[in-house]
Image (cartoon, rainbow, N blue to C red; front, side, top):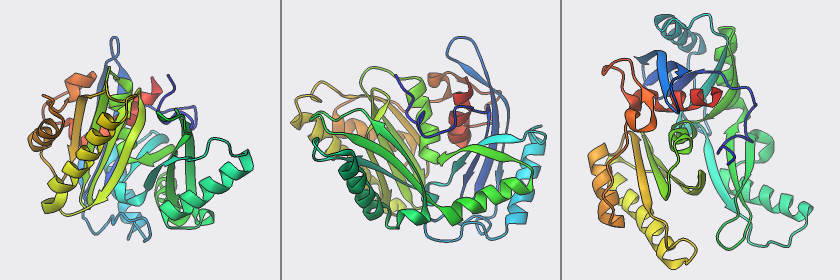
Length: 315
């Protein structure tokens, strides 16, 4: 089964990665363990001033590149990774936009398909494609046989900010993706029968990804306050429940795994909402459930889930 992001990225994957989000930076180095397990060989997290990194799709993200470079240098040194040159990078959720696009007509020519995709992407991303760095992967057809695409966009000038910080340290990132794709690798890598749900909270809302057969079935990024988060999550789950019950091809599917990271909802509350809405009995998974061996309890799975997920691609 092809990996969720295998066609979006360079085929060489480093086992070290950086995770950036507003207020926090992390680095991690994994090594393969027995079977499907992996071990955190080195890792460190660091709280950074929120004024230093202001994630956004349409605005400047890094106010002081030299200062952020200094933070990353110190962070890598504390983890014993300062000499590493090639990294993967998970970007803050607000920096990127991700769309699942469905082609309504199956009989279009390739030229017509490209025109429709371009129109859908420019409308969905809210910017001309010439201003964007876009990755695109064709997914499995939906239950009605329609073509589907996973598309990810970052503004070229914003992406250049992050690449410039790494370049100033003599580093290069061959793989740069939004945070939720790094986190969802734990559900892709450790796939199980049924559907899997990732709730990835951020300071501006949350991204929810529902996977089926290791491919995204539903993906939504919602901008909301913490007070609105529960209601918005309920709406998403009701949409999933109604879609599942209304489509005979999906009627036998149900949520079997739940992963909760980030802000907005606690793990326990997210689990309650999922179980109340879908009639399940799920408990959010943790590091041991996905085969990640942490060196100590002081290092939380949530803090490194995104960069560590990217690092698993090296195995």
